[in-house]
Image 1 (cartoon, rainbow, N blue to C red):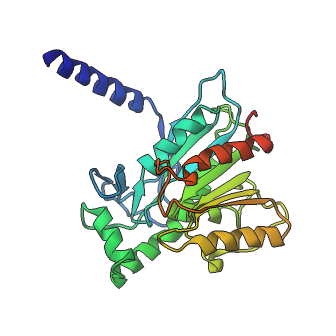
Image 2 (image 1 turned 180 degrees about the vertical axis):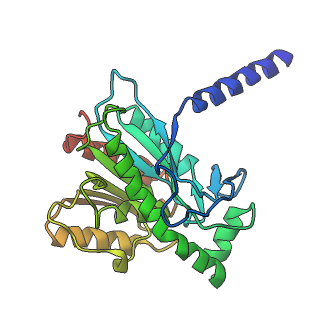
Length: 295
């Protein structure tokens, strides 16, 4: 028994050590535009009903970098935006766990912590449920106020990756963004109103909250979209994914839509023994066809 405990301690130490090797960078130099006075500490919630690490009260957006081995690196990069209703971030299931299989494909991954609504509680999941399911108007407004900052951070993340492409051995013309739920809002928004510095080369909204009124003008050089949602989405966001696909399709721009029969909302990298379990394989198939990675 004593030997088992010692071995377990070693494994935990190795796991923590490996995680610590992932470089974390700030995406803004100096004061952060629009929230210069945000000075609260970021919180972490473990053991919630979301069954993944939850981060809340993000005031200083950052990127955690997952770099592939140099022998398989292909120059493609992806900014990964976890969801959580602009109140929290599901850093495991929709962040770090997404980066791991993509890194094995030679993709450099940047998991984004974007600015969130400030909450005066350590139970971010309850706050989310009160806002979304309880329709608490004060909490909903607090959530809504954070959205423009979250979107701005997604665009700033792309700009940061492109500006540092040489440092990370990235092709500046192969930088994409993938996002889940609220992170899907951040990702989809990057496909509109971009500049040369923050334009994504491909965009992947996964069960994204992105109503028609958030859509803007589809530019002539609009990036290709790879859209994923479940037909039984618990937040009823199916139509929003279909609408975004239809907008791209009507404009004769490149878009692919996958509607899985089951999976509900928030499936991320969870194994549920439904066809939605393999969405990331379909994404990398698509990326191979687009010559973003090797077949």
